[in-house]
Each structure stands twice: as C-alpha cells, then as structure tokens.
Length: 191
Image (cartoon, rainbow, N blue to C red):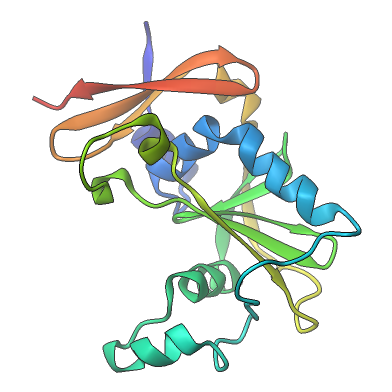
C-alpha cells in the first residue's frame, strides 16, 4: 500500500488548507455534497440561528468580544470572506481554506467546518472522527464569493488513494478507499 502524505500534497499546492480538512472531505464527501444539494432546494429553510456575514448582531460574538475572538461560526465566515488563495475541487466545484469547506449555492453560502480530531474527548469512534459542522448563510449583503486566487485539484483522483495526516499525539489517520464516493479510515501509531 502506497501512502501519500497530505501535508506534502498541500505543501506542493502552496495553499493554506489544513491536511485534516482534505481528509474530512474525503471521509464525508457524500454528506457534504448533500448539504449543498439541500441548500439549493427552493423550499430550503434555515434552522437554528440565522447567521449574517457581519457579526454585529451575533450574541455569541458579543459574549466573546472581551476575549478578542468571534464565535466559531463567524470565525469560519470571516476566514472564507477574507481568504486570498484557496483550494478548488474541479469535480465538486467546492472551495477549501484552513478548516473550512465551502460553496455558494444560489444566494446561500454553505460552509462546512472541520474540527480537528485532536479535540476529541473520550473514546475515538467513527462518528467523532468524521465530525463536521455545516452552517448556511443567507444574507442579502452576500451575492457572490470574493475573487479568490484558486489552486485547482480533482478530488476523485484522491478517492482511490491512501492519504495520511497527523491525527493526535499518538496516531496519524490514513484513508482507506471504498469506491469513487466513499472512504474509510484507520489509525496508525506515530511512534
């Protein structure tokens, strides 16, 4: 089995994307694409808090103002809106920047935040490893994404490879190809 270092792959592309973000995209490709599809539906309805591009009305951001940070959702929104150079998947028309995977779907911005697995508390299981958090922003102030410099790649070329990246102090994660649309994973010792 030939294993490709996701760190080295991203280094070659010279883009600011965390390796685990690319791994999580491969692990959750169907689910992420379903978020985009649902947001495209005419009868799509936002549930939960209604986030806007500007965080001035966000109660969570107001609570964190003394710490000098935004809430998790507005951190992702700010990253996306202020990014200069992003990774772009030609297969799925999806953008990647830092921990975020995103796409404009009509007048909605769908961002999928990929928490790093080093934050996992307790036992490690499939659900915790694959964990992602989508948010959808519908804001009249947002009609198009910024004009990014894009570095292009084709995700289907990665679906049949074994990609590896740092998982936590003890382990690295390796993707295990299933088919063109799904991937499993395993952990290998760092020591």
